[in-house]
Image (tube, rainbow, N blue to C red):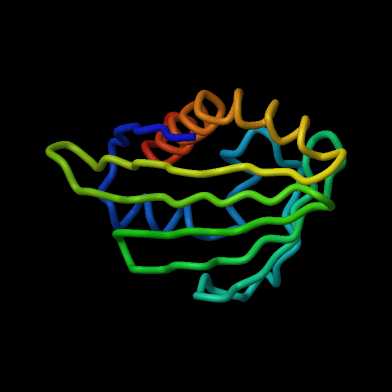
Length: 139
């Protein structure tokens, strides 16, 4: 899975917003809520649990954190695992965010992982564009 979008804010602003799990339900269409302490700042090794719109509750962790350049996570739910890395680059008028990820499944979860992979690039791009609108105040 890969997607690249340009956002109307700096890489620093986009990074600070996108790497904070508490913000994810605002911009990620598949999420209903995120369980992370309200006062916990994003950090390498941070863990949290999400509740998706279809009721799945994966566990996630921040696996890479290079301020304003790279943020990555790994998630697991039953037989499915996924990774996502966001790469941030300042460009004229804002920043470019390149998302790369992988979804895999074992046993009976393999088919679900294939379906998720087929939809992931478009969904991630749409979610990142939504984040850009929120950050620009066009919510």
